[in-house]
View 1 (cartoon, helix red, strand yellow):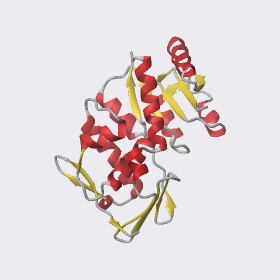
View 2 (cartoon, rainbow, N blue to C red):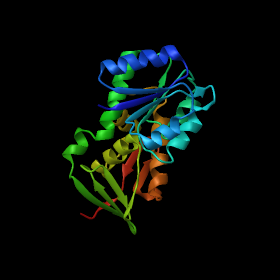
View 3 (cartoon, rainbow, N blue to C red):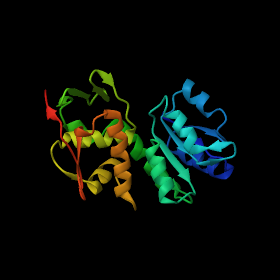
Length: 232
C-alpha cells in the first residue's frame, strides 16, 4: 500500500482528500502545518506528498525546498494561488504537478496516479534498452532503466519523477528534436496553459544536475534534443 502525505491547513479539504485516497487503497498521513513534516519524512517512507503553499506556520515552497535536500519523492502542489509565476516556481523547486483549488477529487486522484506511474517508468522506457551508455566530451552517462538509476561520471544523479520521465524520453529519442508540447504530453500525460515555460523550467533543472548544457540541445522556437553519443 502506497503512502500519501497531505500538508493542508484546511481541515475540510484535508479530510475529503484523505477519504478519497483511502477509497483507492492509499495509506494517508495528514499535517495541518509545517510542524513535524520534515522529521516524519526523514524517518518514514512516503511515496508522494500533496503540499499546500500557504500554511499557518510557514511557506510550502520553502518546505519543499528543504524536503528536496534529502528526498526526490513526487510532490504535487495543492493551492489556490493561480499566478503563473507561482506555478513556475513550484516546478523550479522540484514539484511534479500543480493543482489549483477548487479541484475535482476525481481529477486529483488521476493526477496522483499519473505521477506515481511516472515514478515507476513508462511504456516507452520499458521498450528501450535496459542499460545504456552515452558520452559527451569527457563525460559519461550510464542509464539503468529497470533499476531506475542514472549515473554521471560514476556518481548517482537523483531526478524527480517528472525529470526522470523527461530525460529518459529525450535519451530514448536521441538526436530527434522534440517539441515542448510533445515533451509535456509524454511527461505529464496532459497539457495545460503555460506548458512552454514549464518544460523550459524542467530542462533547466535537468541541465543543472548534469552540469553540462551540451547534453541537451535547444532548438530555438521549437524544443529540445538529446545530443549525447552512444558508447554502449
